[in-house]
Length: 112
Image 1 (cartoon, rainbow, N blue to C red):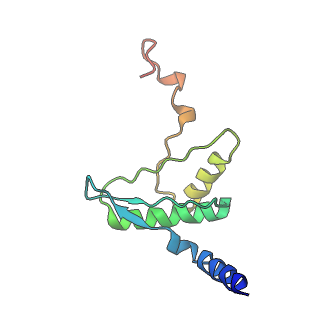
Image 2: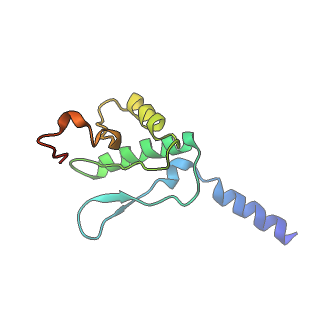
């Protein structure tokens, strides 16, 4: 019987609202804040919500530019995820690694 109640308690602890799982911590080396990593795997939709919530919190706490990196293997959905964020927050800028070696910007054979 005690085992059943502990399972209920652990389930209750995991049911914390996702918005409450997105937390910031102040960096030791500056006045800026950063996101505390979330250890649990997130679905596409939950990940989208976390990114939007994190951007809101970071914008409240930090002055200046907020840089967010998105990485993953080929075919993981990075482009679709980014497009969804752009639709929700059209004022952001996206720097795509797909455009990094765009040959239209090569000057005298130098990609830099």
